Picture (cartoon, rainbow, N blue to C red):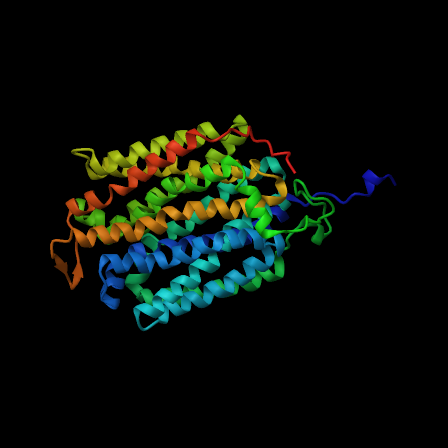
Length: 434
C-alpha cells in the first residue's frame, strides 16, 4: 500500500458539522444571555430598584468580563483546545446563570452576569478553532457566518419567546431553567466533541498544522506578532461600530425606546428587535459565502458598514418615519451589520496561520467593545436627560432623551467605516509569513 493510500480519510461532513454544532449551541446560549435583559428591563429595574445607568451597568457586567476574556481565550484556544474551553465554559455559565436568577440583590446579580460573560466568551473563539480543524480553509468564512447565525438565533429566542416565558413563569424561574440546560450541555460537549479529526481516526483539515500537532505556544510573543500587522489594529476597532449599535439597541434599549416613540407594548417591541437580530443572523452567512465566492473581504465589509451607518441615522432621525417603515429599515440595517463577520476571516488571513486563535480572540474583543461602552453610556445619558417620569415605580424616558442618547450609535458606525478604508485586502488567501 502506498503512503498516499495509507493516509486516513477526511471526516464525514455530518461528523464535522455535528462536532461544530455542539459548540454552536453554547454560542447560541451566550447570545441569549447577552440580550436577555432587553425584555426584562422593567422587572430588573423594579426588583433591584435601579435607574437606567445602573441597569446599563448590570447588563454590561456580562460584557465587561466577556471583553476581558477575549485575548486570554484566544491564547487558551491555541494551547488547550476547544473541547476543554467549551466544557468549562458551560459549567461556569450554568452556575453564573443560577446565581443571577437566584441572587437576592444587585451585587449577586452583577456577579452572576460577570460569570456568564466571562465563561461564554470562550464559545466563538472555540468555534473558530474547531472550524479551522474540522473544515477546509475555503469553508472558514461560511462557518464563521453560520456561527453568527446560530448565535443571533439565541438572541431571537431572548425576544418574544423569552418575554412570554417571563410573563408565565417570572424572570427568575426562566433564568434558573436556563442554568440547568447549560450545565447539561457541558456534559454532552465533554462526551462528544474532539479538538481535531485525528482524535477520531480521521485526517486533520487544519491549514498549517501537520499530523494534528500545533506549534509551540508563546502567548505574549503571539500577541506582539498579531498586533505587528496593521490590519489587526484596524480590524480590532472597526467591528465595534457595527456590533455596538445593534447590541445596544436590540440587546437592551430598543424595547423601551419603541414604547416611548411608537407606543408599542413589550412583546411588540421585542418582536421588532428580534426581526433586526434575525436579519443580522442571516446577513452573516450570506456575506461570508459571497465573500468566499468573490475572493475579497474589504469591499463587502465596508459596504455593510456604510449601509449600517446611514441606516442608523435614518432610523433615529428621519422625520415622519412610521412603525412599518421603521421595521423595514431596521431589518435592512440588521442584514448589513452581518458583514462584520468577515472581520474574523479577514484578520485570520492577515496573520500567520498558527496564530488563528489569538487573532480571533483579539478581534472578538474588539467586536464587544462597542456594546460594552455603549450600553452603560446610553443609560447614563438617559438618566441625565430624565424628566422625572415614572410608571409603576420604574423610570420612563422621553423620545427626546432617547434621540440624544442614541446619537452615539451612528457616530460610532461612521468611525468604523473610516477604519475599514485603511485595511489591506487579503484576497481570501492566508498569510504565508512565518
